[in-house]
Length: 354
Image (cartoon, rainbow, N blue to C red; front, top):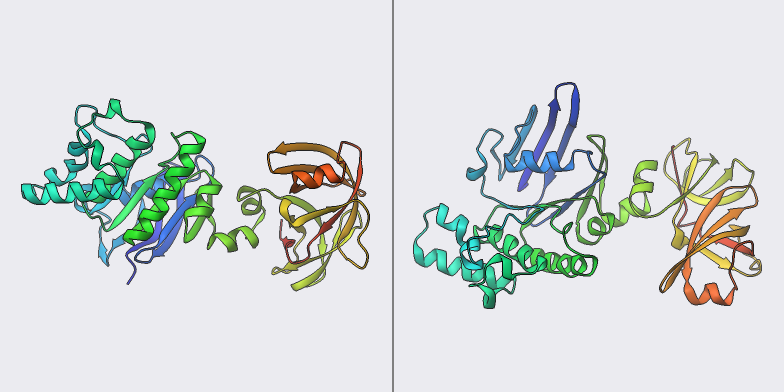
């Protein structure tokens, strides 16, 4: 039995459809991440699960019980908000104990569960501090500990990393992943950050304009996007328009400019080739006996530390991006207007319907 089931969940505000007929079954211990641009409906789904927003239609079940009309405090859900929602007048211990005290649990149990939750997020030594004495990352840990202390059936994370700086975001991301794996708690998270979704999720739910575009394992969503929106939103991609000859693991693709490439294709009538930057290899001379090699001119280089992103103009006029090691860029003397040969791996290029 699924830990959480959403069936035909829909939310309308007048004529505006925020979420359109969404269904998913989430297994016990699974980490699901909803990702999409602002206004796509991901946060509305989270708020419907939490009970903060009633669905227009559809059903929400937790452990088989219909909770669609059950108030939030009776759903046994832990929620971590984007802005932490830490009480400024309570110390760390009392913030974490808050939900337990609201449930009127015995004092000894409140003490034990609060201490255990603080230990999980490594805040034992800071139990007596007030929030104004904590860093952003520590406040986020307080919010996570408070959500875990009540031993929820499902943990809901509402863009929990968005208020942290870049380095701290990576650190807390790793901590959340390790903690979720350690506890085996069913977790639903929403984010607009594709890297967070790919690195944390067992399954990613990609949304746009209230509708699901694709649900799948991170590797599948990245490697085999369902449509051009998913391909462009999840990771970086270049697109070549043209036509395919059939479907399969090695299909001929002809660009609108007449260039020939090989690719994978699962859809009849696919007319757009998705090329990830890391699947483009650059050479100073055409490699012998290799297919998928195109002549190109460097238009622009972006230095990103160990990696250099290279914008390439193909002979037919199309623009693609390659991501190469910075030392290779030096060895090839890459510069605007220099000529190179771009080799596109046939098992990496994927054709979709525009």
